[in-house]
Amino acid sequence: MTAAIDAHGLGKRYGASEVLEDVTFTLEAGSRTALLGANGAGKTTLLAVLSTLAAPSRGTASVAGYPVDGASAELRRRIGVLTHSPMLYEALSPLENLRFFARLYGVVDAEARIEELLRALGLWRRREEPTAVLSRGYHQRVAIARALVHRPAVLLLDEPETGLDVEGVALLDELMLRAPGMTVLAATHRVDRIDVWADDRLMLERGRVAVAVGLS
Image (cartoon, rainbow, N blue to C red):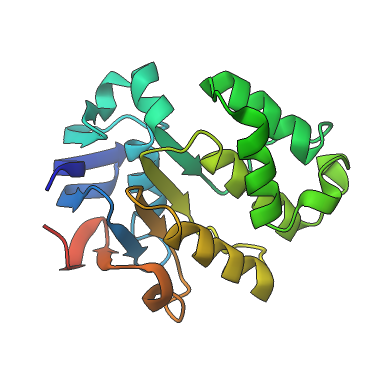
């Protein structure tokens, strides 16, 4: 199988603090992996490095076949990223936000793709409201749609359930299960939900890989 994410000896230091240390793992293309660990274990930092939002201090990693330290535009076109910040324009509506990001990524069938995601995430009726007036949960739904609009090969999610109600979590699970071929790595504290969508488990402890279940 082709490796979608491949990390070897990955490390990240902020000042005197070693946040990631000798992180090594491989995720196969099309796999869905839950990234687990206590607060401060390094989950957010690992996702930031893999998504090119932070540079590794040492080691190597590639995502979708591209090295993360190259931070190429081609790599960014192949990944979908959801961080703790929704990365949305508050003055724009969900529809306008998704049109903007679809144009940025060069999505050919933008209108059809946007409608598909808005309906799948229960946003269709609120598509023309300013994003600023939406609740935290609906912000998260729009942010999830933004991360998916360009059909990324690899989806990197940092606690995607944050702010979602029961319906929103169920819709998120369905979206992740309905994306054949897309590789998902999602940090989560919702261990009660991972059996629904995840094939594999990767657990960090103090910046190191403590448990890897089902990984190559």
